[in-house]
Length: 115
Length: 116
Image (cartoon, rainbow over all chains, first blue to last red; front, top):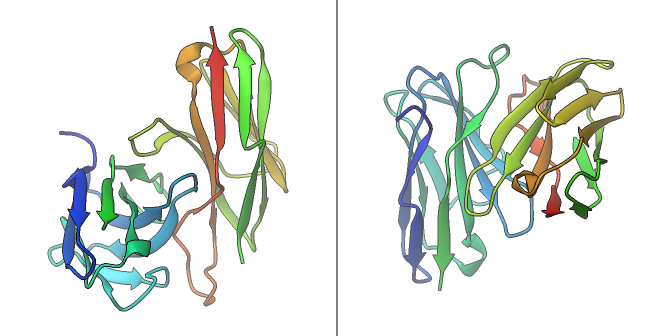
């Protein structure tokens, strides 16, 4: 497909479980972003990759959140010991460049529910 | 800290009734202002990018404008299929730590409902 692909679309976890969310960016896109969107709110920034380098992780809410993009393409957002407050939609976005050609294209998101 | 405030939070229009959505922002230096449309259960869909005050862009029934403090999304003769949440976001040139910034800071969105 031509767009950003995220899997799974829905994830239900029991409190304390670890989860892994996957993002396949648009082919050739250098930049990759993760955002968290709570119900009724706008997306909030979590972390940013330029190729395989994680340049900004200032939005990660705690050390339970970890993201990687080892080969500069697919990225995984991992949440350890999930808590109820982690319930949200997790959005991935990619862009061709970073200063110019910086339009971010979003995937459909993964809806995480922690019980 | 970069801030984006959108108003109104919700807007109901009759089909054909034109209106505007507002996005007020404060940012240290603006690299770009972005408008997205989000349908329920989907990710944000890119609409426009504006880079400097005075710039305008149009697409079908939508027109986005930009000043140094705010942006407007004008909707002319809306149709029911225009119903969605419209999100505004800014990309600052400099991050909070003083280095280069690439993230988007979003407002909470305006939920637009267009009745037939």
